[in-house]
Image 1 (cartoon, helix red, strand yellow):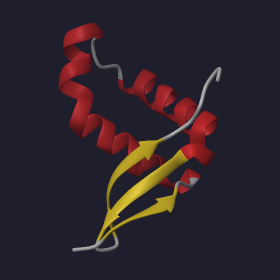
Image 2 (cartoon, one colour):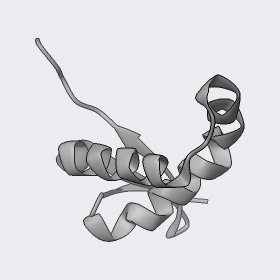
Image 3 (cartoon, one colour):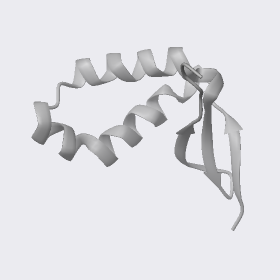
Image 4 (tube, helix red, strand yellow):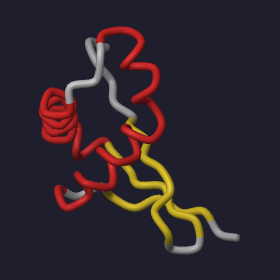
Amino acid sequence: MKYTFRKCEESDFNFIYELKEKCFKWYIEIIYGWDINFQKEITKRELDKHINDMRIITLDNKDIGVTTFYKEND
C-alpha cells in the first residue's frame, strides 16, 4: 500500500463533494439540515478559495481523501 498526495484540481469537485456528503451529511443534517444546492455552493467556494492549498490523498493511485493546509492571519 502506498499513500501519496497530489495537487487538487477543479476537476476534483465531484470527488470532494461526494466525500463531504458521505462523511458529514449526517452531522450537517442534525445541525442545520442538508440542502444539496447550498452544500454544493459552499464546497465550490472552498475549492475556489483554497485550491492551491488542497491535496488529494491517494492510496495505490485511488483517491481516498482530501486535506487543506493554509495559514490565515499569521
